[in-house]
Length: 119
Image (cartoon, rainbow, N blue to C red; front, side, top):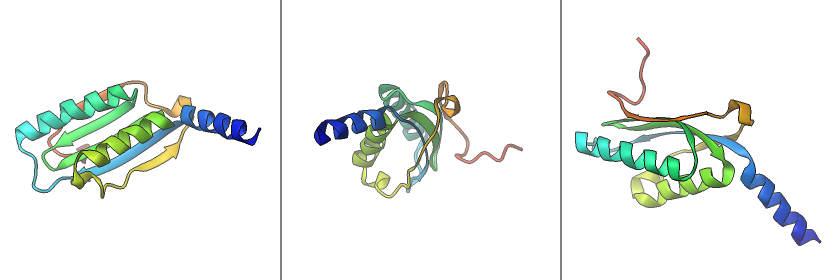
């Protein structure tokens, strides 16, 4: 019976909504073509895993805040980390959030910088 309880617990955890935020600084800086390729790739990967949120891509890297199911978010992060050695050092901040606090749409775009000052 304990095994069944563990499986139910895992199923509940996988349906939990989480939010993940991260910065990825690339060295050397990406070319314009590299930025466009990353915009397309990051958007496709987020859509594949049903994630919503905002992803800014610039020549110096990526700034993202996304939300979705815990299991899909975990797979998204694992895919990034396994794609290139540069992603292994990224500090992905993952926190539980309620569905009301989750992003409702996905925006992925090329930006002039990954941290806009809002001026």
